[in-house]
Image (cartoon, one colour):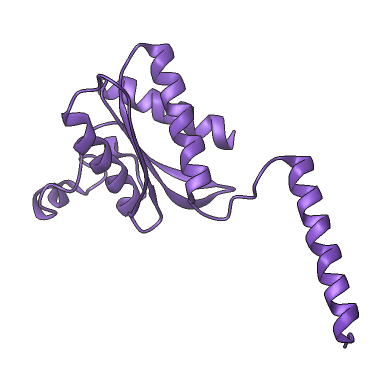
Length: 159
């Protein structure tokens, strides 16, 4: 192995190289739903909502259905807070768009999950390189507007 001093120098060089690469690329590799990725999704959703003229709430959950980030635009309706979270939870827990709950054979879950499942559009699973990493829920517009905003956010972040 390396003598201790050489090892420390090697570690310093590696750290410097990693910092240089991060600065050069100014991006982070996405390995799961983290605060950075959730923030990018929510920012893109708010951007689209503003262009659409809709005030929304946005919830982003990780693969386990845990809330990572929540945004509420000024003047969004109060109900949108809870509904956005439920839409994101639905898509995280079932790994399908919330709009497909009733047609996807999950209709009984609406009754058995004690109000946790949202069965209308605005919740979408989020994948990175084909791997499920979480979900986004948007609420405040019509179901169609919420879906378009969520789709825009995912496409803006993951292409």
